[in-house]
Amino acid sequence: MKMINWVKYVCILSVVCVSHYANGALITRNNFSLDTSTNIITGNGLNWTRWDALAGVSITQALDLYAADGWRLVSGDEMVGMYSNFIPGIDWSSARGENSAVSDFISVDDYHDLITIFGVSFNEFGGISNIIFGNDLDNDGEYRSAGAYYTDYDPAAGIYADNSRNTVDFSASDYSVQLARAINVSEPNLYYLIPFMLLIIRVVKSRFNRLKLSVRLTKSLKEVMSHTSLAML
Image 1: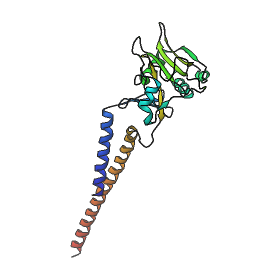
Image 2 (image 1 turned 90 degrees about the vertical axis):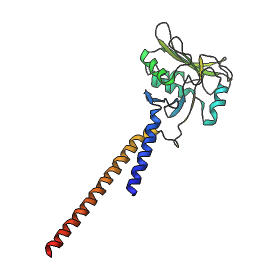
Image 3 (image 1 turned 30 degrees about the vertical axis):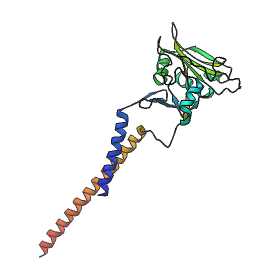
């Protein structure tokens, strides 16, 4: 009975896992993944918001909506790290400083990988994205921005210095706010539980088969002993 109950529990949990991903999928690019069921990105040890999720809102509005769940503004180092993943042909390290900037043309493939995961702020002309981020390290009330967009020739991207326009109350239709949070390890992604559940099923099945074999051997042994006893009479 215990073995049968184990099989029931494993089957139920497997159905839950499959049901979760029937309504969503993971899209992966450059070690970043987008869970389409939650619209949350995971990469570089963080969860990230998509650019289309917080388009047209200010920093104040974005934090009012998300801060209670652990979301915060992305730092300069984190933005540099993310761009370095998606656009490795450019040395973004020079853009770490509050008043520093790096921008250049990028490949079509790199641009498509980036917006496949992060989306766009303004869905016109191939996509226009301006992303406000930073920690205002020099306490001047100005925040930094990054960008990714099509030009008349090739896509371009950049990480820019802080700007007097980028305050906590600034918003525009082609601007997004980039938030991130630590990955909540207390809520493991069911996607990663599926291989584990398949392993459990195999173990349970193996034990169940051994149990059936043991029952058959016991039955055969009893029959042999019965025949032996009859032969001795």
